[in-house]
Image 1 (cartoon, rainbow, N blue to C red):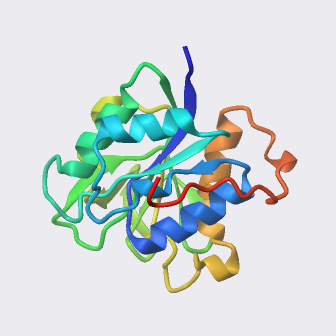
Image 2: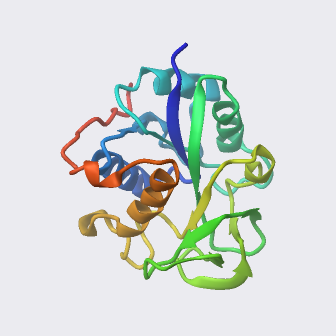
Length: 203
């Protein structure tokens, strides 16, 4: 039975898409660009089919509830993918939202806009908060109950006052991915960013 190692990202807007494509390329992985959407448009079943067709690993998959409180389309798809018998989740990048009225999730570590790793939460702008081990977000409702091995919290992917801009190499998102890969035993020095294994949105 084919299994795939995946990294889940709780953001699916155009900035997230461009950033995750770049980071997946850097680490020799596969970005499922068709998972892009605000909110998520594909079902969990459709995403699993695309993941299992990926030619390389890790496979990066985006999910987005577009501010819907409770379990929206993004989280329903995330839950299906995360619990599928052919999917091994290496970790989750949990993306902070801008309001404190949103849902929240526990995180193991965070990476702030200055690339500092800590147990403190971060806000949408990537600034450290006083809360320990949690962030606010809108596609994080089900993360706690799914018991992921590692959840890394960051600010808004590809943004954070341009500090995570793809033109700068998306250093914050890249560091979050590096943490997940290293915790799973990957030697991240093996990748030189030459892979171009990125799916197209119409696949």
